[in-house]
Image (cartoon, rainbow, N blue to C red; front, side, top):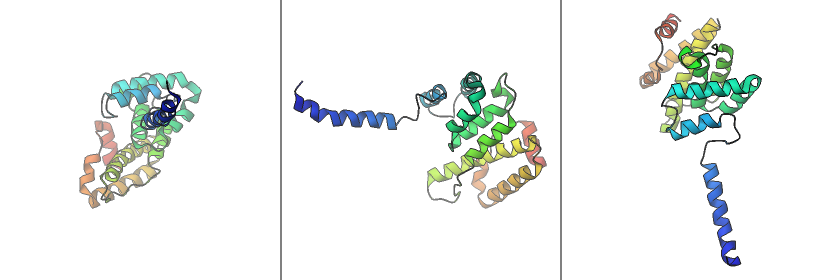
Length: 188
């Protein structure tokens, strides 16, 4: 191959490699790479939660003592990861053999609540994030109730009800809850 041609192709090859690496949310060296890959190849977090939970459970078991630190690093402030990982930690249908971990779930949900999104924003992406955060707040409220932090759970519910009155369309962000969880929410 001609040296001049190779010199011209190198920047193009580097750009292609950088773009392909930057556009992929899957971190190969992450212990959660298998979960990321599954979510990515199935079009997001909206599908087959049982399989996602199964993969999550395998990762949890494999990481053992390192699980909490690695999970916090994985979730960071990603809303979808915070919501689903928190749910996988608490819901018996998803937790499999593992016992619900209410304290870790509360910490994971808190990661998803770090950044505040304006529900009145004209930007649809911001409004979608606000809706996802509502789902996280409801799950967080339930976890706080189960941890016997009733004042915090009650304050979360009051804040949510205020938000629903101001922005009725966000009531659609209310996640599907079991009859027991719905009873808890209503009791606060």
